[in-house]
Image (cartoon, rainbow, N blue to C red; front, side, top):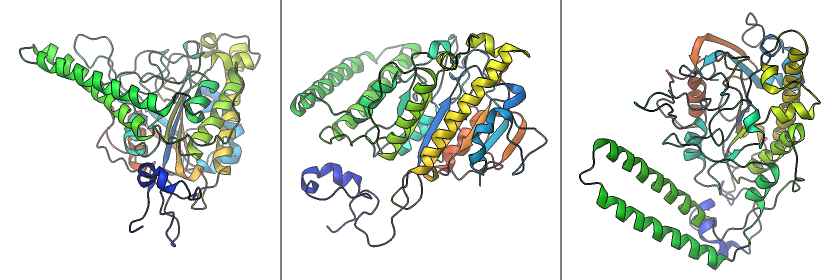
Length: 427
């Protein structure tokens, strides 16, 4: 071969390469005698509703920089403290719904930005990253949900993800569905799947031709609606192109067992975290979001307090429930970080070193939407880890996402209501 092989060569020449061994570094100068090139970067966004226990989750604002004590709610993360950064002072400027813990978390959008409409959203940070990181993976991004989402303080949306038109992106609802989406091969014969894709393209062509004839003579409002319609068609075309690219490529063998059906609460989150690691480890996707449950988590901890009531705590049973929730979530997050650090990549570093992980909520506590709880970890975005940053009050949370995007190589000028990157956060 006269040129270095890459992932695209593999996809285009599956039959020619079938006799070769499954080279660990294929796509990253596999046949070069020099040291392996850097592994790809990944992004993971984990969100929970109903906020945290204000008194015991946030570090002391007087302890900033690299010297700070872990608060009680984050104590299970003690072994990873040097790799965590807690950011205080951020919020979404236009957020005004106290029960919407995720709707605008990754977008920073103004829900009233469209005249005459009561709801508007914009593209989420994960989808901006997916356009950059997802070109060479089977799935540009994966969205994960839970059946308990309506009871968990999240707000409108089908996942954490919103596309470039501000429309919700659907998510997978449980660990079993997620496992099969990631790792189970299609049972429909290849020829039938090819025929179905051809039929879908024919339908799109016909729809575009009919819609094109309508454009002349429309009002501006109707023209805007039609343009939005055309964008949705283009989105479908992109997805069809991705399907065609991977049509004949078998899915990778899963590094985890198929989950048991009916998992809920703490066990559901733990298994989803395992699937997140598996998806990144196999390079099935490089961008993942998870809108995780709170209501079923409380049930799995034998907590009798209702999730919404818990968030309106005062000293007593409700506050105790809130603190136990925080501890359980921190234990689960610590386990996820353990697993990311345990997976070694071709360049000798860990999966953790090549992943940027953000964890938090749009709700601080009770009905407060300021100082969104924000925890960052992972080595992919060149962040200043092991720090506690207290930023000026009402710093746009979108500034954090803009900093992460720049850290992974997406040099977009702005995101949502951002005002710039955070120099205090960048390493």
